[in-house]
Length: 374
Image (cartoon, rainbow, N blue to C red; front, top):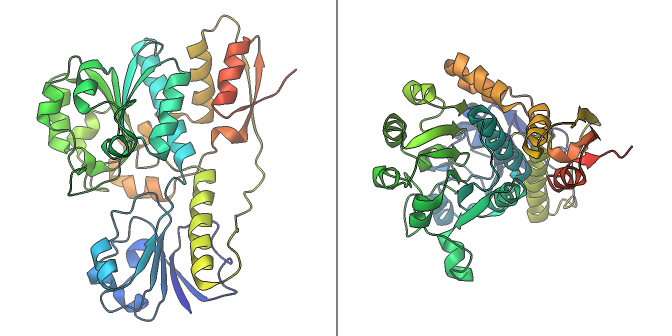
């Protein structure tokens, strides 16, 4: 059995070798020739899995170590009996951390309070639901927009885009990229949406670049309909639009989900899928994450709740540093992403909080941090 795997999938080497001949290659060097006699392809979003790549292959299974699957031609797979699976939800904790860090950074830069502000969350799956919980922990009101869920579960508890237009101070997107049907998300928010906003908003996109139209975004920023823009995902990556980059408050190279824990989750999910289908007996495999204890100490005296949260998140994930790096060298987008040093999620951190009020400790525990009692 031959498996071809993207060499950048972490924790993978050595796991499947007892069961198969495994070839590791950079994602952009996986070719039709190398797949000609392969049964399994383990990939990331950099590899377009379509007829050009798979047309003459013997691939039976594609497992992508990503939550997104728009790089897989599903119709081609269906017509050619190729199974596919993704690592849906694997990096929810990392994206949750990213959005919290972005919200607190923007609030600090604007010298404003998040308490009482309204955030519209477009896409309320695993990640969007966790973002909603984070927003509520920060004292924000949430508007949840997810038409497929609203149809299945009933409209109660969900908002339409018109509600978000008229009530939101912040908008964040967590939808898959789809190009057709009732729930098409390609270029989801258009000029009319932004022109219909009741007030300028802070907009965060950590879903897929093509969910938002680059030209529409630039126009909305220029017209001051978007007050602040946070962009992790871009149209035409890695050749990103420099004019858009210059108008973005926080700009990162598609790394919102890049935590050690998220990557471990993704690799375990695809390994378990391969094991289950081919009977390898490692259906519960999970990588050993190297012990790397993280601890920070903070004196909370005379600090507001939001100031404490911002200080903690800035230590755990200084999002501004990633933004500075991309803005300084946008031509290095691929390297900044490919060679990113994965960060730890909140659960890996122990906090020593001096002079902290009980509600602060309780909220930080809810964020996933461990609190060391003294």
